[in-house]
Image (cartoon, rainbow, N blue to C red; front, side):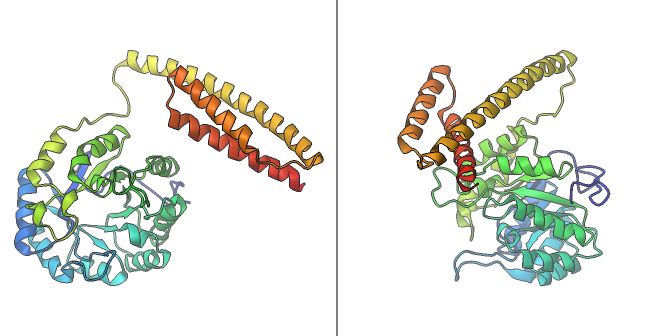
Length: 363
């Protein structure tokens, strides 16, 4: 699997020897014209950005939308690369895209969320990349399926690709209260836990869906230790042919980045580290108490399950469950705990209780 260092050999987090954390990849959602792309790149370069992103082939939800300029934009990226000394990147969705991008000398490629969700397309891309040492970023699939995401890394890795990184761009949801693609941060966190040396980037543009959310999402990702950002920037966002609301000018992007607080994984203050370790020890002890309490609770659940089986009583007791939920949320409020957190925990416990009693009924 990917977590084994012998077939997933990262020596450092970055893709390019001259980059440092955080690596910022910025540029328009779509390359629309040579003028638009070069002007955006030039302003980004003047504001300290060294890696440009621009979509050439755009997988759109509906037909008759702007689907990108296609391969003719490769020469525009090449011009940026040569005249501005910037790294350039674009999205690929099939083997033909890969071949054209490699022929043009593109520095970095990424696989989009819709493509990641299609194992056949990922396999085609992986085979087209065999024998090529180029950085590849993989966006999470549109649905919150971590196994599908990891599967995409495995397909590329089995074809010899090792300079891999992840882009967290959020997940599609039918009811979006605030963000376009709710982040569900626990999923990229779990990815990082399972593939420890995997560089992890955040795409605040696609998560937020609107420029007003970029700062808070970017800061959240930095607080979680992400390695960089891939963010959309356009010289005139209002006139953009795709995703205009989530793009910002290079000057606005500079303001966003200058206000980011970049945190380190460890403190150089030994007293701080000592205090954290002491507090973590207390947490470990409390965790053990929680586990013991859960184990005792499940034993009681099993006893109840046996009585229900012997007396032909249904597993689900809606009135009892409602009383439990009302009681624990009321107590949570008294203790200053977040209601949503407590509901999630007890709903998970309730589901585990139902599952165990179902097993007893079928024994």
